[in-house]
Image (cartoon, rainbow, N blue to C red):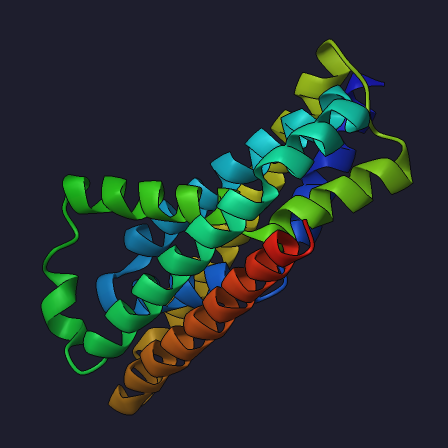
Length: 209
């Protein structure tokens, strides 16, 4: 039963991490600009945030829903502003990916991990994904079951980011120099679009109260 929950958690982690959204675009951009470990550092932040939400959802959907209702608006506002800032940074650095590559020390990798951790925590899509999946599959539990499922989600999410960053790194030298530039611009556009959406949805929630 424990192994079954762990494997199911891995599959859920892969399923939630795989769709390319603002986090995926950001990690691809980081990998192209700063190398494999910079991309993985971003993926680690995302996997840690996925684990936090998985633990909340697995520990009890009712409690998770109550918490979500209380923090949804500030999280959307925070996440929206954060994505706007990251999108602007992506556009600003689009012309100089090689200069950014020299900055990937341990301090920079920790900063990347912290950035994607906060961004994933404040992403409404992530919150809703976990709420819907755990409720639909009846995975809400407590004790060892919750921790086992959470560990599986973390491992599955991290495996995806290792795969994605490894693939991008392997293909990077086969792609034209302009590819990194366009990825950076597209990443910036995606982040800004999601940021505007997050802020707009938060303002709609506020206006409805």
